[in-house]
Length: 267
Image 1 (spheres, rainbow, N blue to C red):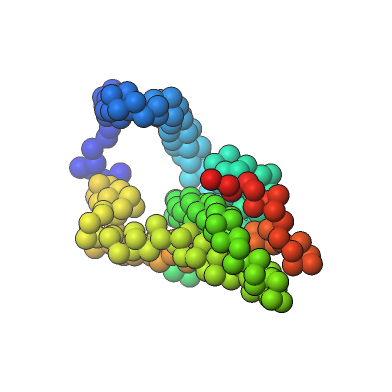
Image 2: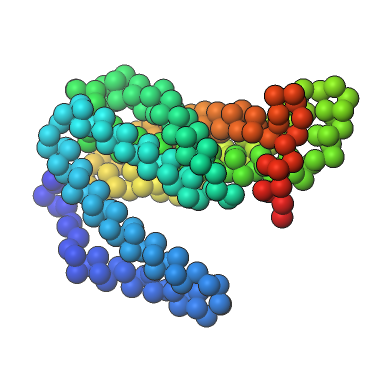
């Protein structure tokens, strides 16, 4: 730890909780009804981050590939579980779909970063690979949820057009193609927006964190560039994977619409 590193005490953390009161006051004053979510979110964020800190300290000390793998599996399961809980309407298939897609995206994106880009020794060094994997999974879940929700709404809102295409002999994939394209584009919007704003409007977490830790700003910038490119690939692969798998749930094997599934997305 650098000599000029500023340690934040628990009392200071308590002071920072006062910022949450701002959100509570605004919610109460405007009658947003979000007070419960703000309080629960604040408590959960505190508990989850403290627990994560203690766990990662142990993992970093152990430096064991199997322990690191176990952490990765827990992160993927947690990401899939959160996707299931957040998704509207809630479907159990969401958990399994996200678990599979996140695992594939994680292996395809994060592991090459540790082995060839960062060239860490060993390549699974948890101080590097776990933060990268966590950012990838979190961003991918957001992209996947946006795709899944958008796809259902687009098909529901353009039902007559889809029915007409099917009646004229189009396959389910052909009839739904415009909706798939638009849903994937929607899922990628947050990541693309972040790419456009990073460094100019927005100073992201890993850049700010490494600068606060005493790393030269240009080195922090290099890490952040790797992260942004990684998130772009992860969001794209997740969006495409979720869209092309989920589209099958809206059609029968005979290329007929499943109106019961579309009814879930009625406004």
